[in-house]
Image 1 (cartoon, helix red, strand yellow):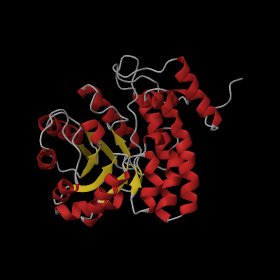
Image 2: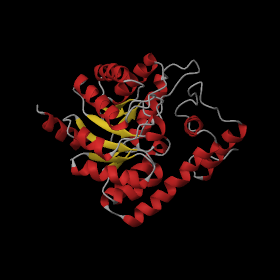
Image 3: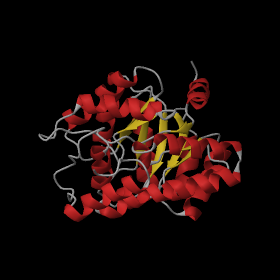
Image 4: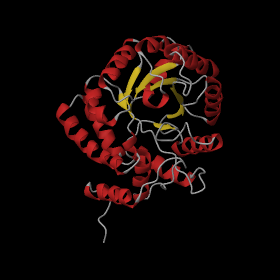
Length: 309
């Protein structure tokens, strides 16, 4: 199969609402396989068109490698081919990224989501292009280019994206800067090159879909996959009034993030719902009592959690 044919086939399957799922961990910081199964069923039942593991929500760049592999294997098994499984590759070096990409391919994922290299402040475009090119050469999987500059400190520019789009394996862009001007420039470049475009910032989902995005990758969909799916479908159908209503509802659920550090707040919400535990990486700040109370208050107010007796 030619690279262009592979790109066309993957594009046909990569669309809609793709949640960046959390990595459920036991108290000992190992993979919680039973919780992975519950969360996979929750998001697929809510209409997810794919599952993205080991992104920022999935703590991919910070998990121990054996835990990351165990989480990935658990999601591949739980999804069982129902939707594509995408694995994030976020590493400090190209050498580590190439190793991780090969490992995730062996575990059976359907595509890789490639972040820019982290840590060294090298010249941006060259570093990004060399990094993605090396990963593409080391795997047969399709690649999604992932711009999240506030975490990688290497923004993916339109110039770099034009070069990356020429790589046969590159099929899509996930843009999570949260800046509309940056998103617009990258989305225009991606569409001109035949790439699919996905918005990763929750507050910009509706606007992006109405402007031509192919889908969204919202972290809050771990909690409300059905609402996120409804928003994406409304946007893809061009229903501006429904998009406005559903975006406002999604924004209300996102107030969960104000309870403390955003990821521990998200995991706390999933624990309150009985889907996963609340354990996150040891360096991440846990919620205090007030933060936990706020998570419960938001869930209860929105009708996602029963009122206390």
